[in-house]
Length: 218
Image (cartoon, rainbow, N blue to C red; front, side):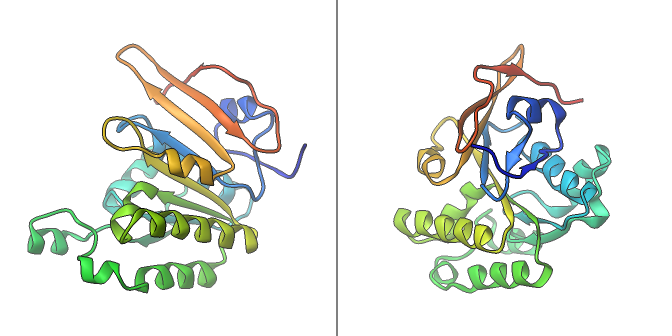
């Protein structure tokens, strides 16, 4: 099966995927801290800009300034990427002395979901990066709400013809098996003391090159 192919912004990864991602099917980039998930995602957004598309970065973790510095270091069109921040501000961190995203009372209200949808409707993005989607667990009251929230968001992105990329922390106590079931494509980044390897374990609608493939961040 084939469909409209979209570049990931990384030529070697496009080769592994037999030509790139399939529009508008979504993709999960998973890996441990430091594996390069955000950098992969920024390449994805930048490739969209190169193609004349609109890109939206939904920030659920790192401060926006840090993300912009990372994008600038790789010359990845920071000034043209739209940002929507759900991550806590410095003021929130100082006031609460913790790094929680929202208080429990705020979590029970759908304000942040409605705000995100309004942002998507406002800029009409072709590509959306949610980084990291695992922070979404802290914005929901239980696992069922977490899964239904992600599924609803992914369905909405497909409905409007936008390509969605999610990142997730993996390893240790953090599990993302449920997210892997919800997405169309799963790409894992594995880091050891000696190497970095990328593996595709799921790619609906297309063949791909199986096995481990070495990658480097420079």
